[in-house]
Length: 500
Image 1 (spheres, rainbow, N blue to C red):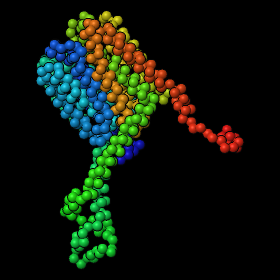
Image 2 (image 1 turned 120 degrees about the horizontal axis):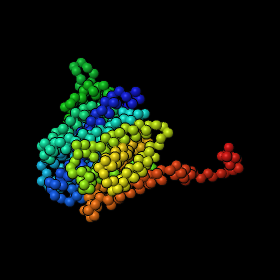
Image 3 (image 1 turned 45 degrees about the horizontal axis):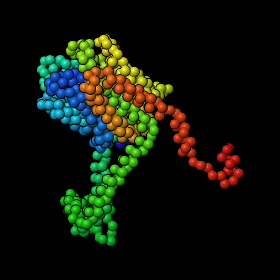
């Protein structure tokens, strides 16, 4: 099943965009607004900020680190089954977190279970959106990824009110029940390409039918109706005759006979060998992707950006409270302000990257430079209004997440998008997982967030420099010159012809 050009960039594709938008909203709403829950967990469990920060870092990082596995699940089973299964994981993890007796249990239920569910949703929604769009892929991905930002804005305010009304445990139970609507979103994800699991089943069925058709059955079973012609060993059977004479019972008997023969062992060995060859091809493909210098630079940049830019999402409310800028979380938290700015950033950056004369990689590098500079200003700002303005800037430039799939497609092509995006998200998840604990440890060590955010801003700026330098056009010219084969001339005529 190959997608027709008429099906792309419109029609049912916009239904896919709406379903994927809602799926990301429902899955990422609570994890991305974990900054509202973080002070409640600090007060409830009385643990250090570095230890408690593992909950928020894991829920955002585990799903991205497991992106290669999540992408393989989408390739094999399709976006719809994966999204249904992820709905069970996200809802189950949130409801389990309501009964957490300590931070360790919370790390497992909220950090790992919910994080893996979010990773499956992310891989499924981005993959099926890329399949349905070609020319408007940047806009479609921008709309889909804004679901996380809109979810963050809604959930940050909603969780704050639910905690006041029903307590922390009641809040998590209600949010978990709402996330079950992920299953409804999965119903709209009609696949354009048949998933690998079904293709394997179809190929196996066709192979079995061919074996059964062209295998000569016993002579006693080749008697057709009375008065009809009976076949003889000298006369070969046609496919039509075999279809008439073979029934389910004969096929079952033949299958049982096959299982008891020596050839079954050879078949098993052959299947194992094919599996090994498939795995070796997969590893070889990953190696070829990582040989691309632009892809390596992009992976490093995403890692450093995630390491530095994610901690404010978790700590910004605690920063405002620890500096005495506000006594408690406001009606519209700083997390919500940043989420709305991220939503606008994803849409505008997604539209900008579709413009022909704009280079997606350099646009991403620019957002990293601006985001790193904003992080360096956090320790300097000493007013709540200034913190709100800073959250707008940081949130807008954090919208560059909508560019990752687009840039990956430009670097490696659509055929390797799923695998390459899984590798990229692994590096991003690693940075997200390590960033908040490092910032928390900085605070536990110095009793101040100043050094922590100087470190975060420096990491983001370093990633921007690396991405810009390693993707300069001069590297392509050097590689082209190095790959040019040496020409051996056998005569003067060859030299003249080559110059001409």
